[in-house]
Length: 380
Image (cartoon, rainbow, N blue to C red; front, top):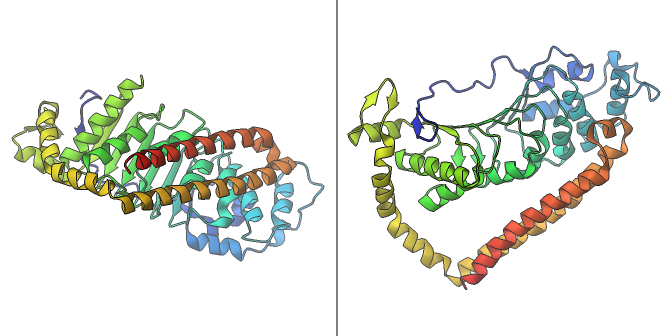
């Protein structure tokens, strides 16, 4: 089937979160001593509790400030001089995880993406040269700039999987804004709640944010409550936007039993497990979608022109800018700390280079939010 066509496939098996994984809390010593047999680690809230009560064992008595840079003994020293579970302690732990040369998969399950003690931990992980797959499970990622900004830049990362997560409608924009490599090819959403994707326009916006991800070749949506019409809307919108940007088409797959039944009920033939001829009916599908949402869109337009509604949204956006600037200051403090430690500076580079990139990213985000504020002001 041509990549430009919508493919509705049933993905029965979901990537397991436990098979072959080792919890961080049970392998801390192995990580600290750079056990390169570790390939698949999962981090849960219980693991963070284990980190908070961690105490060095007898095998850690060989640490020394005079140990050679980047050596295991020096890493142990750096970790042990900090309070277990503190931001600085997690910073060094993140670097230790990145130094596991055979680590290929890392999973965060139920971890708070806004946890203050993990602000520098995310960036430490991004130095991993071997990490190819990131999994996020049972997490609210509405505010995901920090966790994604710190973790997805592992240079060999090719796949991101979201399981049972709340996904912001602009996640594509966030990823595009923070990615600094072209290795990421696949993003999978399993049983996720996609924010602001109920109306046709919202789905078009969601697709528009994903489209600029230049290296992406495959998107998978499994049980994400998208019916046949919404799936086609997402597919066509994203593919058309990719063409406008001069990018290649993306293979988009949906596990949507309701969509499959709906398509069959509409008289479309099923052959060899694939639904054929969907593109012939897309125009009719969009006509139906327009009719179904016409009344809803009219109500939303009237509501958007309500002064109180507009003012509340403007205030919310202005507060978001304030929050972004405050987080930016915290980020710069973290970067200054990480680049001040010789051992970590070898992994992260110069502070002024990071600061320039962070400043530019902040201004892009603020500019985008300000555009939304200006659009709302125009409705007054």
